[in-house]
Amino acid sequence: MKSPGTQVLTEKDLLRYGRQIHLDGWGEEAQRTLKASTVFVAGCGGLGNPVATYLAMAGVGKLVLCDDDRTELSNLNRQFLHREDRLEENKALSAARSINALNSGIEIEPIVDRIDAGNIDNLAAGTDLIVDCLDNFQTRMILNDFSVRREIPMIFGSVHGMEGMVTTLIPPRTACLACLFPDSPPEEVIPVLGPAPGVVGAIQSAEAVKLLTAKGNLLTGRLLVCNLSEMRFEAFQVAQDPACPVCGKTGQSEVT
View 1 (spheres, rainbow, N blue to C red):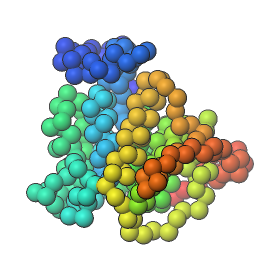
View 2: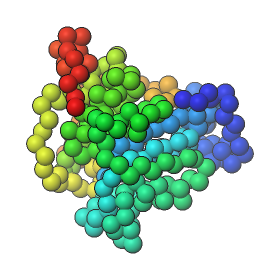
View 3: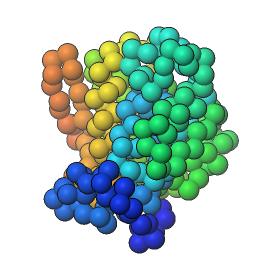
View 4: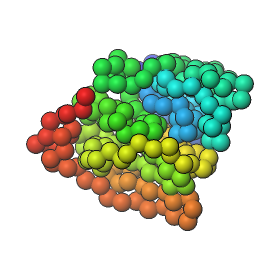
């Protein structure tokens, strides 16, 4: 993170972010901290759309948007940063265009690349926080391994149908994703109602802003499960697994 003390809030910043600057205990220092922050958004689909949007609206200074996928018509029931006239356009580039139109005062770096064990250190270098907006656990575990090795916080979010999950992982203080999901679920075409990733992505972005500014209580040590069908939200305690192959004291990273 750049030093918040070097960040100058312009008159436009003070007006644009005034409603959150006036939050209890917030002030201009928290806004300067956001302006000094860099967030790596892994995935520009159903979760990445609300996450990138709300982080941009909050004034995070730099967003790195990574996705190698192309927009399809079937995405448009939930991915509002993309449009009909951008079908077949790369999602990171499409999202960057929309976010830039929303807030031209922040830096946006789109990356057209597939995350793998060989490139993650370069793709996410220099970031203060990772927001996991992916839809497959193999790549999530690569993110998780990087998060643990570099001790960079990661906010996990997942959606299936009308249900979702969110937790905030801060290595080495908390469990990692491999502690929570030692066995990756099988790959499938995931059914999803548009508002579900909207809700989960909004919660992920709120966690990101709270973590960066050190404001409020985080979902550390807790897995929030959202059931929109029954409109029920429950938080379950989660603990680090001492035998975890990624973060456990007796384990050793095996992610490749």
